[in-house]
Amino acid sequence: TVYWNAAEPGGLPTTALDEAAEVLRAGGVVAFPTETVYGLGADARQTDAVQKIFTAKGRPSDNPLIVHVADRSHIEELATPPDETVLRLMDAFWPGPLTVVLPVRPGVLSPLVTAGLSTVGLRMPDHPVALQLLQAAGCPVAAPSANRSGRPSPTLAAHVLEDLAGRIDGVVDGGPTGVGLESTVVEYMPATDVSGRHGVLHILRPGGITAAQLRQVLPHVTVREAAAHQDPIQAPRAPGMKYTHYAPRGVMTIVQGDAPEQVLARMQRELDTAHARGARTGVFTYDEHIGALRADHVVACGSLGDLDTVAHGLYAALREFDEAGVDFIVAQACPDTGIGAAIMNRLRKAAGDRVVHV
Ligand code: TXA
Ligand code: MG
Image (cartoon, rainbow, N blue to C red; front, side, top):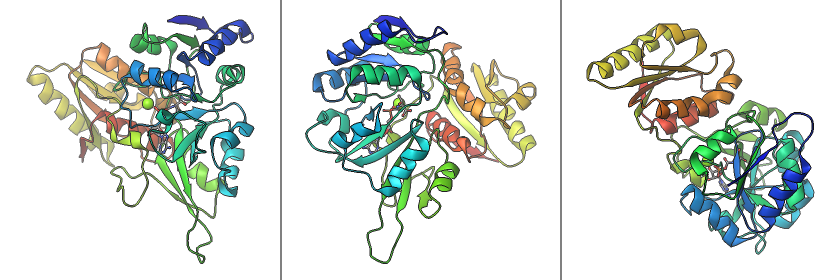
């Protein structure tokens, strides 16, 4: 695994990016930073290259990959022309953490990318290293998060190497990622009956762009949020949502409630009970409550008043539990709105939907 350092301040090392782009063009797999998490990229048109992504990650083959582009003009060759609503989203949020699902144009992308679906997820990342790499490669780049399946997504090049050293051709280090959680995945369903003037935008995966941001740009469109327990009849799903993305070594339980004292008391009771039976305990909380909880491993990565910072540090915090060898984890819920919806989505997945309401 070649390591290219593009994290140094003072301009991007173009020779390193040219080398990495050459590896992509030659059918290799290269991890690179985006504003959300590190991605593991391959030329989306080469089936052998895309297969290497699935092999390196140990990813189920029925979970489609997001295709990354550096330029809006490139989507024409990959998907059917987006309607006005989707164009407005691209105007507002590209480059940025929004993936749009569009009907795929047949015959260009490897069938492995779409996992047999008739649609493709497209996104333009808002990161200078990613954009320059995509430009230099000159091809659409399929890239899931650059972690082993079942591990938290990587927000540092070091996380990528922890999971994938020796299994991929290279990694471009661009320093820590910004948002820290993956992009929001949306699919627009135009109105089908003549009377209905407006369609529905389905949020298939909550992420870096919030529902409120989408509603602000599309005031006349119904924006439907992914429910905690989504009914597949009512909303199309991101196939990846059915997999436990991160299952900690230890059992994780979320405690959720309106009264903080009750939430903290219940969390401490769960921790004490586990401690009494000899478990190594961990707790995920927020800056304001860090002194109120006792466990073998206490983790907070921001305050409840600043959930952007919590999102930024969430995956590194989750990695810490595994490193600390914790076998019983209690996580404190945060408000399920704004970026909090994406945080809670990832916590619920890590907890296998074990949520205690107090
Ligand atoms: O921020 C991100 O989106 C990162 C960075 C690297 O760009 N990528 C990422 O990829 O999170 P991945 O593969 O870990 O997650 C892709 C998600 C999955 O939930 C997948 O099911 C969904 O997007 N997805 C991809 N193509 C889709 C499609 N055609 N229809 C519905 N969902 C799709
Ligand atoms: Mg992922």
